[in-house]
Image (cartoon, rainbow, N blue to C red; front, top):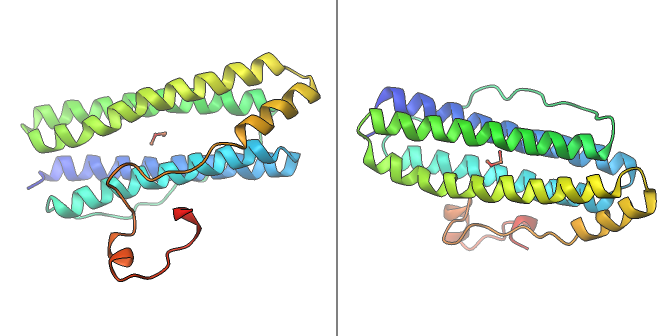
Length: 187
Ligand code: OFO
C-alpha cells in the first residue's frame, strides 16, 4: 500500500510526464509550422512515449492501492527561436526530469517502500536513454547549423523514428482485452 506522501509524489510526477507529452506535442506543432515534418514526427513519437510514462505511473498507483489524481497540466511554450533551440530545450528538460525521478526514488527509500523503489528503476533506465538520444539529436542539429539543406537531411533522418510500446506494457489493457481496435498508436 502506498503512503500518502508517496502517492502525492507519484501523482505529481505523472503530471510532469503529461506536461512532457504536452511540451513535445507543442514542439511537434512548431515543426509542422516550419515544414520540418521529420522533426515534427520525431516530437510526436516523443509525446506518445511521455504519455506512456504517465499512464505506466497511473497504472502502478492504481494497482498499488493509491488514488490517482488528475492535476492541471501546465501550458507549454508555443514557439522557439530555431530548431537548435528546440532540441537544446529537449535536452535540458530531460535532465530536469532525471532529477525528479531521482528525487522520487530517494523518497521511496525514505518511506521504506521497496516496491516503488524497484518500479522506479525502469524510469531511471529510461532517463539514461532519453538524455543520450536527445544529446545525439541536439548534436546533429547543431552540426547542421543554419544550413537549410543540412537541416533537411537531419529532418529526413528524424522522420524514421517509430513509436513502440515498452515491452510488456500497453496503455489500453482493458480495451485490447475486449478485442476492440485501438487506433494508430499501435501501428
Ligand atoms: Fe518521461 O521521460 Fe522524458 O520527460
